[in-house]
Length: 422
Image 1 (cartoon, rainbow, N blue to C red):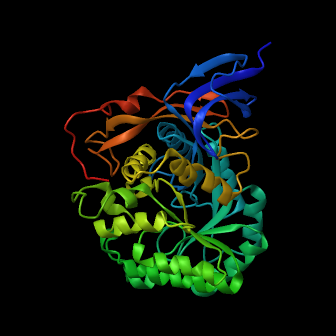
Image 2 (image 1 turned 90 degrees about the vertical axis):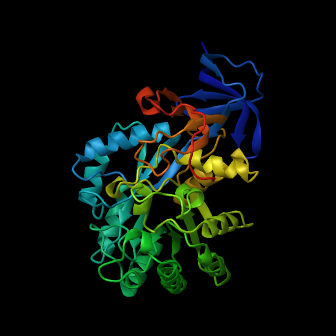
Image 3 (image 1 turned 180 degrees about the horizontal axis):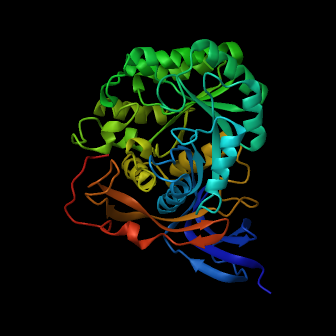
């Protein structure tokens, strides 16, 4: 009888210690053995990837799921399919925008039912609103949310109104008592005006003022807080200083903020809807510097997928991030740390985020040298861009999954494609 259900070999397997040749033995959905590349392991199926890299599947934090006018079930199914194409093996769904927003136990159960049977596992963030009380938070926590999310402006509009300082401190105290994490959209509503300015005109000072409010509240309460998304590089020193005064503050950014300067997208680009907006090329470069600082507080990088405002990024984010990272001499280990290991650690998703014995066999075969061009008519901000790195195969809990060929139509390598330098 075979010892393993399957064995996957790669000369470039990304384990926590680095990248090396390895043979991964999988049984009952988990990684049971990691051996030298040429080790003889008995299995029902053996896959040899050769020089194609083997990565841990990405964990996408704060994924927007619900598409306006679409059934919730259909939204989850489509999100799961896009996740597979992008090398994401766990979606952490944002509580809003959504119908209904995930702000109580009943709405959480509705989303859990809608997400059942999607192509990838789905975890949930619980929403924090002006009316959220201790019982709501306790019920959401008991129901299985992996963290909570709130906003200081319109990050969850129209389903989650902006929190005032007293409400923010109160929520932080209650979440800290649950030993949980709060994810905060930190743009300050007062700096955006009423009604808020257009998405692409939102100033960096809104992020700075919001970050100051978050630090002040967290310093009093002692809550673990993760700012998402972090975009204004001028706030990097403020973010770093929070740790010096004992505030457990970390941050999350997205590949489009690292890859797309505000000078690039045309007037009709979906990138114009980003909240916060894309910033200047100088900011983009400074954001990379902040991300690469030793002991940087910017821990996680995720797609920022938000179809409610026309932002479809889930399928291309891993490739876009790698395209920019490799030009800076970074490694696949860096890519895996930002997209897999750090989100798993931050959210307490034990058994995910690493290629390690005893962990879930959520794996991605990634052609890191393969070139592809995003179709010109793609609904993502990466439309027309030439990217390096392609998801070839995906395993979820050890099960091979099929990346729908239709999603790749027109996405093969095309000579002479345009797009910005990332």
